[in-house]
Length: 374
Image 1 (cartoon, one colour):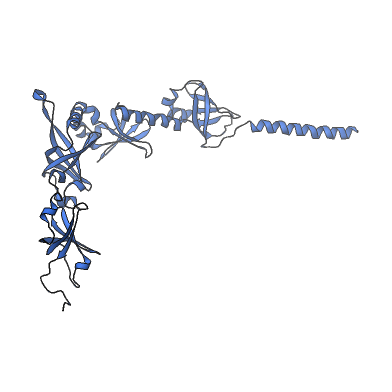
Image 2 (image 1 turned 30 degrees about the horizontal axis):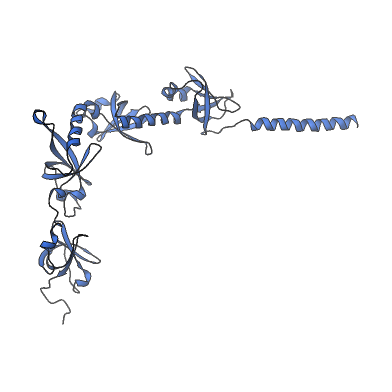
């Protein structure tokens, strides 16, 4: 074999070996992209940076702004800990991959908030901005909100004093999915009073009826204030409580516009129909007798009664017989050309009462010959 040919064969063989070695080396190296979530092991922690083994051709590092924003989380770490991080810069000139612990930090924070909600332990917040409905607060980098109703009486007189101030509050709703944190300052400043309220709510029996006063009305219902007794004998005292009456629980009659049915200051009787998380659900209509209880006795078949036109529909006319009891005159029972007006008084007779489904079928009492009648 000639020297030239031998040299050529060696060069070809050497190149093949080199390519094979490079291929094996490169397949063992990980490359990263910005925003990628990775796992690694803490190699070193200093006052200014954290070095992480990320299994790549370079080490990962958390430093400067990323270090500062995760300082509280970094204090919980030690060398050898397995961590999760996000890639900020895949590779610097120095050969490092720059990382962020932001996601891990928020995982820890949300766990802390959920645990605080469960335990009722207070957490430290900082007041940010006051609005008519309450104040936004900083919760270790997250934005929380304290509604005005969750501020103590004293602080409610000067909410602006909380801006820029650090104070304790209790988490009452931590919703990670919607990134929502609702807190209460009142749980701290009025803890004793609230403990008495909770005791009163605990002792109150569902089905009890109280005299109350409407305090506020909203589209969804109204709030009613009552007084409940707590304790026995000499230790007995009256505790003011407030509960919600949903719009569907205001009247046996259908309520479409709440301020047509009730106003702040009205004296009402309410029945306790539920208790949940220290809140009372009340009913005004269930504090009264249900008009359907003896409907079959009062509205016997063929009985003639007066009613008021409530509304017209494609299949007939609805007639109010009394609050909570309405009936239908089907369109097939209405003479041709007959017209009705809302609020008009009409004479009807009972065709059928379906107590189970709370329906009454009516017929018209004709006082004149229908149009076209021969």
